[in-house]
Image (cartoon, rainbow, N blue to C red; front, side, top):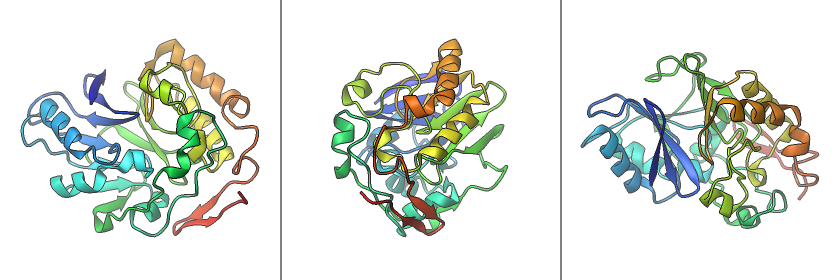
Length: 276
């Protein structure tokens, strides 16, 4: 696993093709939280990275999830149980984290690239965290002082991003990405820029566009996403504003299962799927 310093108190941990984040100062005994939990079978690597940054026996106060796709929750059960810490996610993600519902099927015909073509093989859940997972509450992020969460659905029904006003730092999850998310080559050798969410797993394109517009209105100084390298300054501002304006041209596929009709979900999970 590779560590990239985003700000003095936020580190990006690259777990093959996906990112997770340590939020807390790099010193033994510092309080910290984990945002997202990587791929399956990555728990031991995350534990080693945490102890290297925060000292032996390092334990976060909580785990926060941007969403529940397999590449963001792969180690969450093992880590939450080992550390004995709570997990927080949006209430519309809870069905996929408590054994109630699988996500809408991916669409391997959109996006191009190897990761899109094999997406039908990816796990769709659900996983079951039981009582350990909690719904995010409005205007309240325990253990994340000065941060707020922003509802950014589209890629998943309950996707959220995290924003800190004081330095305009955005942890965007998969609301948008900073490398081409469908390409394995781009994941392994990131091509910096601002791109849409991973197309093969995005089940509501209208909501995804609204979410990008919402994040663009924040004018973040730094954005760290679920895929790709952190981006900052004019490259981020210009790229994000362009994506927000031209999302239908730059991100939405010309055709695909969810392009004309979204999957519909509620607090119980997926309730409607458009025809394949």
